[in-house]
Length: 133
Image (tube, rainbow, N blue to C red):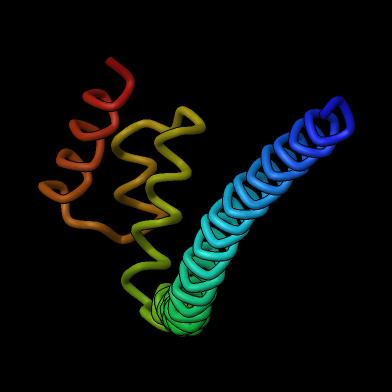
């Protein structure tokens, strides 16, 4: 009888152990499934983010090319303006007159040296005084 009790107790302990093993296996399986789903979701998000980064890079390259084009156009315009400034003989006269006014020449001297009409020379002096004020 004692042997039968021991055998039943051993069987009960074995069944309880087996039930615990199955419970732990089920828990690990569900945790593994959860982790695998998270990994799948993360992989999908990574793929989406990589696509967005690629689109941003393409857009930035396009913007960069446009900026370079605008800078080149700007440089060309600056060069054209500089060339026009030196090509225009009237601009040379006025530039010289302004320089003389800045250096302290009087009205009569500017009129005589630059061959400007009195009204223009007076206007130039007036503008120079306003700048200085």
